[in-house]
Image 1 (cartoon, one colour):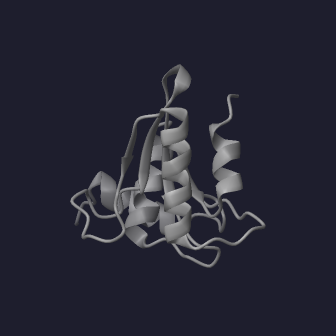
Image 2: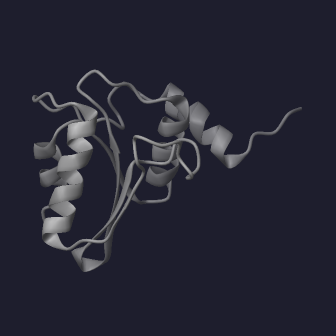
Length: 123
């Protein structure tokens, strides 16, 4: 009987998850490239260290890795996958987010800057 790796299991579970479970569906609409630029600008303005996967070159990170890893004040780390209003997660992206959630990390799909700003405000 074949065995799944942890990543394969997470991908399977992500595909079976209830709709909207890993996504935030905000009211606004923003192009994904513009959203990347806005998030980068906000992180720089606040002086937060950020790892960002560029959109204009093939990724050197693992397939499905979220677009941003952001070190927030208070020891918080936020993983962010950007999508346009109608953008859909690829199975590899859903698997990453599912695995991060399973491990207790903050990982979100963000579709506009307002949603991002809500996520980074102190709890």
